[in-house]
Image 1 (cartoon, rainbow, N blue to C red):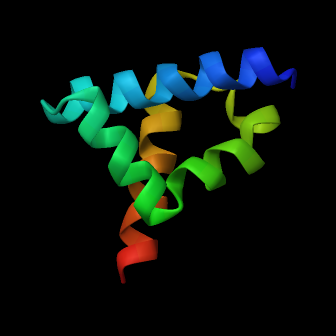
Image 2 (cartoon, rainbow, N blue to C red):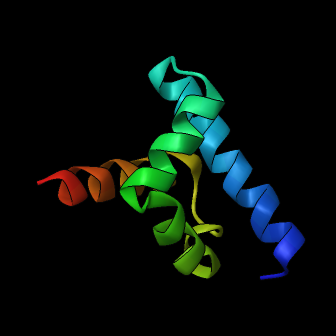
Length: 69
C-alpha cells in the first residue's frame, strides 16, 4: 500500500473507532500508538483495508483486548 494511502486508511480507522466509542480522534490516535494498535493496523493494512467497517472495528477491539490481557 502506498504511504499516502496507508496514512489515509489509518486516519479513517482512528476516526471510525473514535466515533464508535464517543471519543476524540486525537485521544484514539494516542491510544492506538501506545497499545501497538497503529503498528498492527499498518502491518495488516493490505488485508484489512478490503474488509467492511464492522469487521475492521471488531479486529481492532480484539487486538486491543488481547494486548491488554
